[in-house]
Image 1: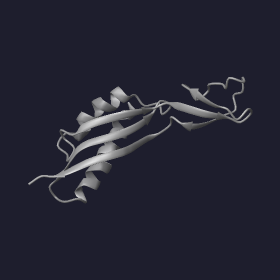
Image 2: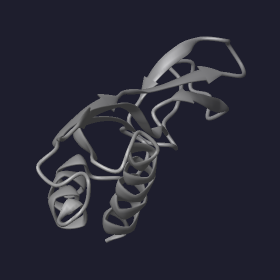
Image 3: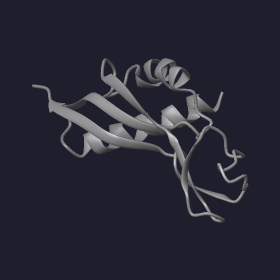
Length: 116
């Protein structure tokens, strides 16, 4: 279950950035972008978030996951096509596709508040 180690990294990064805001800063919300070709299950990330955030600056924070569809450009016909797998084909029949979206896994936004 690699989602656990991925989410632990996300929590660690966000906690470190929140600490830069002050000793009592807490993360209230995180938005992640997850590509549908990234081999990551959003539901597993959600479950792992609660486990990894426990007893950190992120405990109780909201998590929003935006799923990014797969898109690729065909090297033979230059078309841009939707893809659901890395080995999809273009409508022209070519396998020569370059993925342009769908492999992302990034922290898009983080909200921090100062607790007093």
